[in-house]
Amino acid sequence: MSRLLAVTRHPWARRAFLVLALAAAGWAIASRWDEVLQAWSALPLATAVAAFVTALAYVLATMASWRAALTDLGSAVPLGPAARMFLVSQLGKYLPGGVWNLVAAAEIGADRRIPRRRSVTVMAVALLVSIVTGLLVAVVAVAAGPSGVRDRYGVALLALPLLVVLLVPSVLNRLLGFLLRRLRRPPLEQPPSAAGIARAAAWALLAWLLAGLHLFLLVTALGAEATPATAALVTGAYALAWTMGFLVVVVPAGVGVREAVLALVLADQLSGGAVVLAVLASRVLMTVADLTLGLAAAGRRRVTSA
Image (cartoon, rainbow, N blue to C red; front, side, top):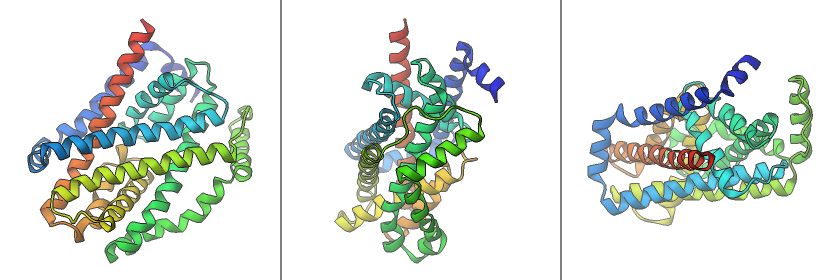
């Protein structure tokens, strides 16, 4: 592991990471180009633009949740540099393995003299917050969705009480301390606090609402009823799909898993063809949002370093 980290500190390795991550994200779209065109042609332009803007806002709210955890653990990084750290590192989730965004966050944070153990811990805490809040929102999809959703994915909610307990500062701090000792790393200078976790959770909940709005815009444009019940269902569906996709770490960015969950939840809301179009359009717009913000952050970082 130490040799791997040493390699990642070279400038050429970081450039290679960025190129590979961008290529992987681009391939996620290009490999299904015919379906992409079909989904795009079925959506009104105004709807596609509104859903894309909402997807951008979702990514930024997720970044704000991570930044709240980063500040709570002792690194109050200004908004601009924090956004660059997060948005560039998130491109790593499109690479197979499920850990490259963590490695990237640690290395980019090291440039700002943030200890790598703190960067990795912050990302882990932010992910735990996202999973817990996502499962809370997903309760709606499991309760109100088709019976197949409860049968296949309802078991995921059984983990919710345990995960909520893990977010209790006294429990979380003991767990982090144990893991750091096992890894022979120094303890955290400033452990997570209840207020910091609450701020991160508030941003995460906003992110789920924005993700739900993004999907709501798509499904109503394709024929679903524009009602509060539909909005609640699709928000829960997206949170459930993201959570299940995250758990399958060998699949880059949950490709395939999230689509399957969304298709099952939306089956009662849209015709079969419209479900496929909504799910694919959501994946494409979220990927393009990641690419857009990641490229903008990488470009800004290069200009700042020049």
